[in-house]
Length: 231
Ligand SMILES: *[C@@H]1O[C@H](CO)[C@@H](O)[C@H](O)[C@H]1NC(C)=O
Image (cartoon, rainbow, N blue to C red; front, side):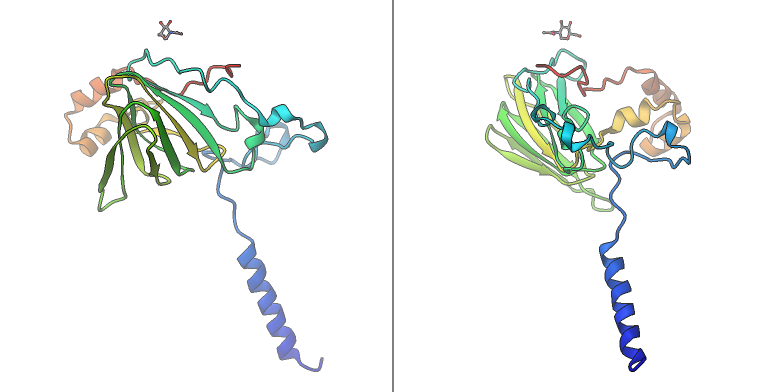
């Protein structure tokens, strides 16, 4: 070997370059527990892919988003998702959307999307929208939206929308994941299965234990409409 130093530096560079290109993909589901036996496998970071020869136009098509969601429910809002479960062609594409309907005083309650930033376009009505950033600042970024206005909820931030107008409201939002995930704060904490030990919530929210137990007995409505695709 004429110049072992040169060869070594090439190897070091190659290793550095390969580690710069190789990274763990962001998870596309809440968790993915490893199993040795593929028999019980469900999906791995997304869904299994359909044989491309069998793919057809309808794999990329969905209709029915013109139909208003039913807002006759305890919080007065309904989210109609177009995630990978509804539109298979979204698999691995890093994007999805929702239609959100709000009755008068309807609320899309404080929630986060662990895997997606959301950009919301208000079509009709008046919404008070906002999000709160991370500790320790916990600053509220809030705004009243009119039709034609757009607001971004950065990935992972707790956010909400309230209809403060005199009519129904409807918005379309795009999300930067095929499967954004939705964690509604109140539902997750007060309606977990099994319930969180009340002292945890009493201390965290500065509440009496009996108040916490009362909250845990309440019905916590989930406004995500997973009824079959509306054609
Ligand atoms: C909306 O939901 C309410 C409550 O479940 C139900 O009574 C009503 O019939 C629904 N309306 C429509 C148009 O489906």
